[in-house]
Amino acid sequence: MNDFRLKSRYSLHSTVLVTDLFVTVTNIFVQLQLSLHPTTAGRVYAAYGGVYVSTAMLWLWGVDGIRPHLWDFVGVAVTLVGMGIIMFAPR
Image (tube, rainbow, N blue to C red; front, side, top):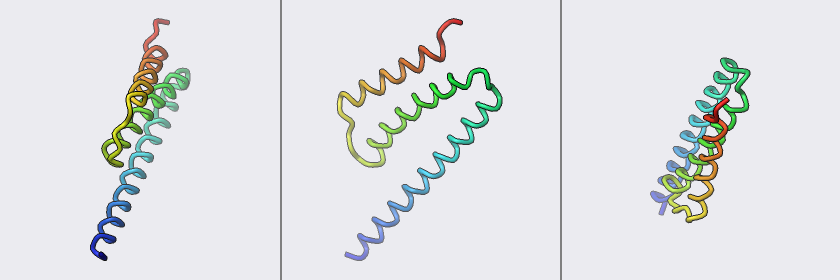
């Protein structure tokens, strides 16, 4: 029984470390993008939002072991299409 508890704690600790690392790297990326391209900050945030929603669904599936429903996939697709429209629309 104690062995299971140790594995559970280690797994939770690893998940927290990976999450912290991902958030830190993403924040650095966003700050660099905003400082290098201040005129396109809104588009950078749109891209970040699309990537964030997609990554959240992958995290739900891969790390938490919960398979997303059809509507989760539809929501991710809508988010990515919206992001694509904002990022790549002709100016």
